[in-house]
Length: 114
Image (cartoon, rainbow, N blue to C red; front, side, top):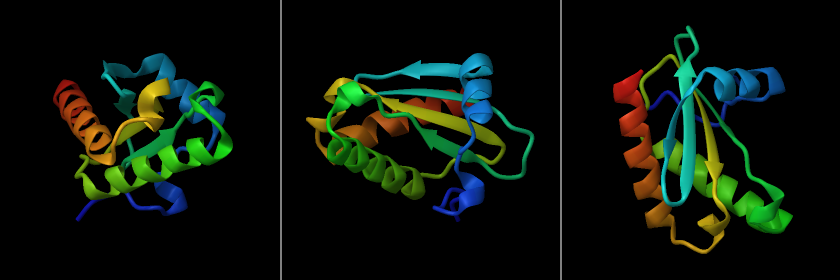
């Protein structure tokens, strides 16, 4: 069973958590997504989404976040990792499958490094 769900405990919510991941995390750059991950010393993983305003309108940014949440919920992530997903400007123009492929490639690479 996947550790990531939409429960509040499994999402990064505080700016100090985002800052910690961005400062100490390992990076994986893809064509659509940049992922940053670091160890969190907790028995579960957490994920946060940082979608820039240059990506598009609020509707577009929320659509991207919904897609990323669905992808993260369907993918197995090892416990004890904090992840920040940062979609690039072209994320709104690509298909769900392309985002999913980029996410899986990046998260597999990061999990092997941590």
